[in-house]
Length: 146
Image (cartoon, rainbow, N blue to C red; front, side, top):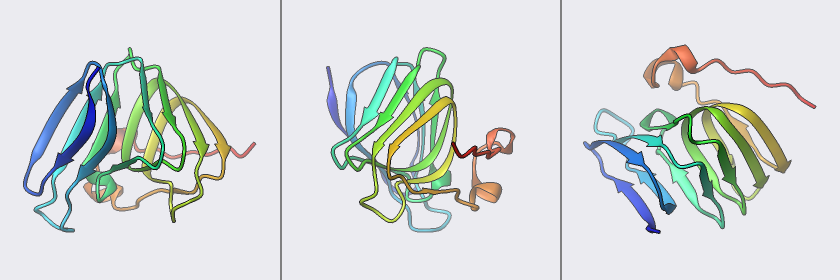
């Protein structure tokens, strides 16, 4: 099974279909303007996970879009993993374990079947998504505190 990092440089617009393997980190280069890199990921594997101080970082939340296809049913973040981007995975159960070691553990937006938080996670909805993000149709935000 392949394992490695993904790096998307400035001025690059990449679409990636993930059918297998793992990644230890994703970085999308951002200069804060029109030259930002952009990555759209379509995840077909059942389980996607990042942990052990791994980072999935779009630079800006609008630069990284994660689409969990119907076969993507589980997403997990653990061991101080961080995420900056958007996740649209309506068939996936998301488990967030640990957290708390960086300013914000999750920056962007998230839509999933269920979300379980076990630990100390800090969330930040990036308001830049209202203007620069993917289709506004799925950026609805709701939170119910248990």
